[in-house]
Image (tube, rainbow, N blue to C red; front, side, top):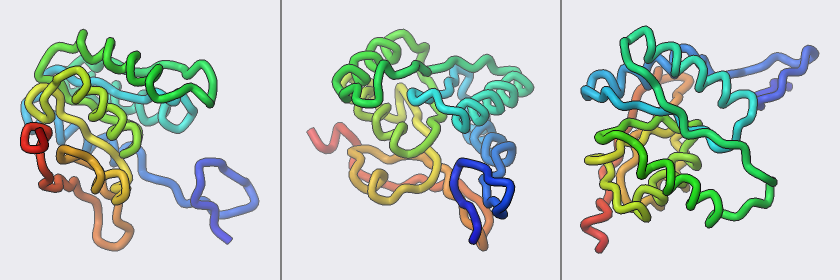
Length: 171
């Protein structure tokens, strides 16, 4: 038995993501595209994303870029999407553009993209969103391409940007 989850158990071998390598590739993704306005997005405020976020903020600082944060603690586990979306919408309107945002995972990236659409912000013209995990169900249902971190055990690691319809094409 091997633990591939987020919780460490001293009795079981554990398989975890190489967070520093992941963060390094995310920073490279934004820096190589010339982004000077970058933020970390974690609306869940749980331990593992907080660690990834801290690594991301530190790596950007070393690259000479200040990193903003889109993070909040949900009032309850049952908080509905409309409350969360209103919060994201209000924060997105305050961001300098163009803006790159690194999200904890693809689900958070999808939430962010929907909030950007509601705020009439273009993806990727105004806000470039980077997700993690290559969740096909999430990524295939988005109205715009999602740059995302794909982790492959045997083939190495790379970014993938799927070509999908943009929000303008769907209107």
